[in-house]
Length: 162
Image (tube, rainbow, N blue to C red; front, side):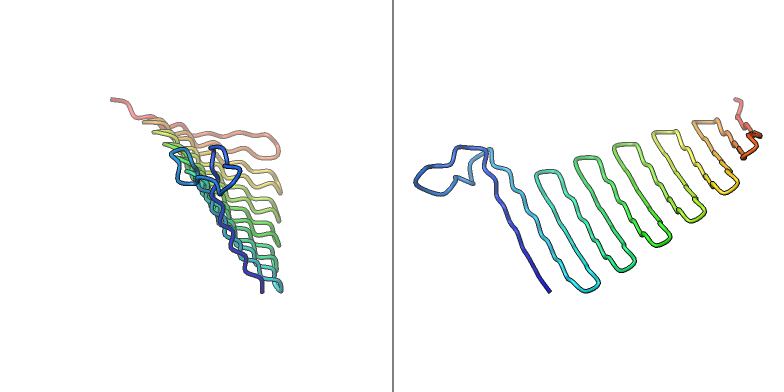
């Protein structure tokens, strides 16, 4: 088992020739990286923090599982990747925008939930016979949309009237 702890304080100011950098100056930025690596089933954990940017990666390589948490300002991304039957889960949040993707690649199934303000879109995509289902909701407007491999389309439109 190997444990490596890496802490790096970077300084934007000039480094004195005779001494250490002035890391407590007003314009310094702190970069912290933690790496835990274990060989066997191969487990790797990375925590990378630099300013307002935080990245967490958990990688486990038996059946290949990868978990990424990425946060930068108002932007948050969470990804879970598992690679035997190939499953990918992504949660992406940036301001009022939320996107959830579930991707499974045996028979190829993709589920997307997209929310931005009062706009919600749900997509279920299955690519054996190619079926696409879209639920689109924006304010009082709801649309349900279905598409198949023969490109036949059926839709239901629901709208409230005041």
